[in-house]
Image 1 (tube, rainbow, N blue to C red):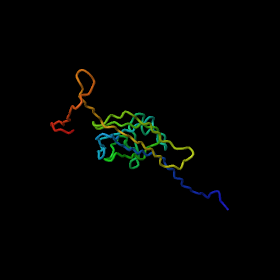
Image 2: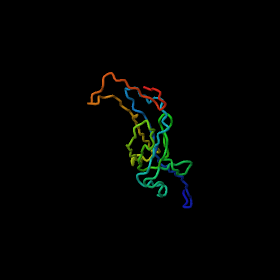
Image 3: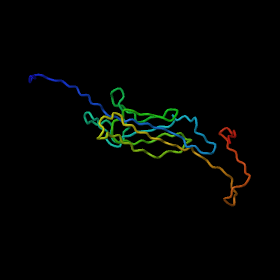
Length: 178
């Protein structure tokens, strides 16, 4: 028997789906004597910026406007975290990214490397068939090239390289390094 005054209370917990970004940096290895092994990658900086207004799924307010640095959830609040440096080994993970469309760009590159002009469009969106997914992960692998210099000695009258010419490369103190 159920009385019309009986009440059943049911608590339903809604989880927010968020994005996670993994950035992995590598240095192109040439057969010549350059080696990027052991390079400290902390001099590389990236920016993740909103390509659209990013909305809070709870109330529809704008979290991040188009062109602004991404904000993520830090200690329960949205904070700007879209500019970041890689760790020494060339990796970085940015978690708790609100769903939406973003652009990733490498902004600071040590001078011994060729400037990287590519940008990556990244979209975190929940699959309509899988509403249980809580974290959507994306990985961006970035390879940089070291700056290379080719030096040779040519005849004044043409473009032929002079056979047997010996050249030395010196540092700013005059010490021969190659």
